[in-house]
Image (cartoon, rainbow, N blue to C red; front, side, top):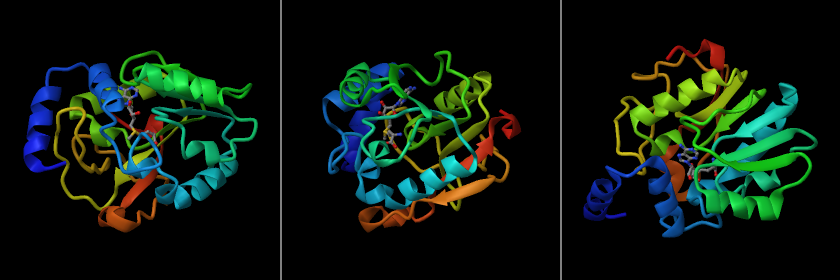
Length: 220
Ligand SMILES: C[S@@+](CC[C@H](N)C(=O)[O-])C[C@H]1O[C@@H](n2cnc3c(N)ncnc32)[C@H](O)[C@@H]1O
């Protein structure tokens, strides 16, 4: 998006609820240029390393229940062998959830329309929160982390740019990289990092990763 268009969009998004912001993005197909409706980062090309590493991590940690919060269109995740694990995908865009339910529901998978920043979440072995905090204001990120902790779940696997040097606040609906080990989040060192190995135009974000933490180790 061009800088002027970005500014106008920011002003438009400023007073909207989180649900309104992401419903508008979904219905206007604002995140284009990919085989996924959730944007380039959610396409199959950008998730090759991630899909491989995630499968291995789920096995190694013996994860039996996974909350994908948010799940977007489940496009790349459908390629991950989830086996008989209990998978729950949640997203604030209810029309997207209805689509996912039609296409991907089965006895081990379910999809729910929830706001991850405030709706009560199930207690699971791992919460995966990929490519979401980058779109949220500090206030909404902190509320979401608190809500994840409230669920009593064990692990959090979430996007962080581990070499990024300064976090900036945004209006929810925009985008910027964040490093969760820096203020105002100050996470401890992650237990493990999955390097997403971004390619093509995304290569400029070479340190885009998923960091693994125990939720009890995050003080916020
Ligand atoms: C860029 S997509 C990423 C989706 C998925 N994690 C992936 O890797 O493909 C971001 C998603 O976050 C959802 N989202 C943003 N804020 C949310 C909230 N508070 N609760 C639930 N979903 C939210 C949006 O609707 C959108 O589908």
